[in-house]
Structure formats: C-alpha cells, structure tokens
Length: 181
Image (cartoon, rainbow, N blue to C red; front, side, top):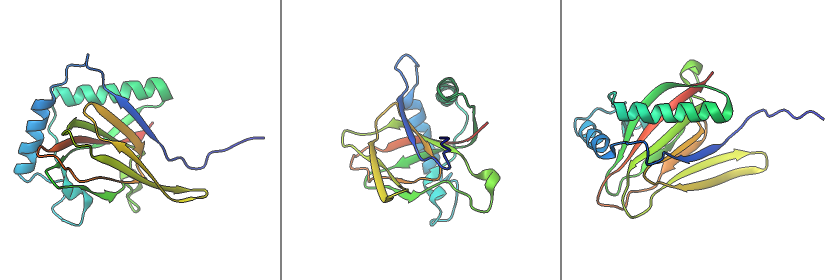
C-alpha cells in the first residue's frame, strides 16, 4: 500500500521562550501608532487587509521571525520564506473578520503557511477560530486562545477570524505569511 496526501490543513502552536528578550511594549506602542496614522494594508473596508497595518523593521520582530524560521526548519526540514508581515490591532469590542490568504488569480502571491504571534492581550480571553472542511467534515471549527508569546502557524487556505476583544486594552498580533522552499 502507498498512501499519498493530496491536501493538508493544519495548525502548529508554540510559545517563544522568555529567554528571548523581546520587548513587547515597544512593539505594541509601534503597532498602536501605526494604526493611529492610518497605515492600513488596504484602504478598502471590504478587504480583510483593511484590518492589517504596516510593519517597520525592528530587531525584536526579526528575532521572532528568526525563531519561527529556524525552529520550523529544524522540525520539518523545509525553509519558510517570508512574503508579507503586518500588525493586527483590535481595540475594545473589535474582532477580526473571517478570511484566508488565498490569491485565486495570483498564485505567486499565495502563501503556503501563515502565522499569528501575540504581542499583547488582556485578562479576558479572545480566540482564533479556524473553519475547515475535508473528507467527511463539512463545517469544522477549532478555537485557540490568544495568549502573549504564543505563535500559531497554520495552512494559509484555512478561513479564520479572531473573536471580539472584550478587554479595555488592545489585542496586538503580528501576522506573517510564508512560502515553503
């Protein structure tokens, strides 16, 4: 018998250890400023990228990306090549709309893997919700709590959203998209 996997939908959860001296407060402040300056990735309100904000290069963001790339390569033997990065800033009572990262007519812009890394959240838990289907499952859902220092890598074609922020402080995530080589 010879089994072939035709498609795969997955998520990987990890926490960046405290030994990596990331200054989340600096990155959180930068994300809030970026949002207040209106540096949306898209100006169209219907576009999911309207809720994503530009990221400037910062050593602590580079450390996060290096951690993800190196640990993924070590565990799975493939290299992640970044094709996009953004901040996601959810103020009180804001959620993130359901979307995926597929570009149906621009294959070269379609990432294989995406990542959310939480910089800040409050005491009330919000969740990343994944919606998936395959085989006998038609309306599958899976929820993962948003927690500081947690990173979630996942198949870019999976629909996902983040539930409303019920905290007075913002939920801040970094978002990365990758192609595999």
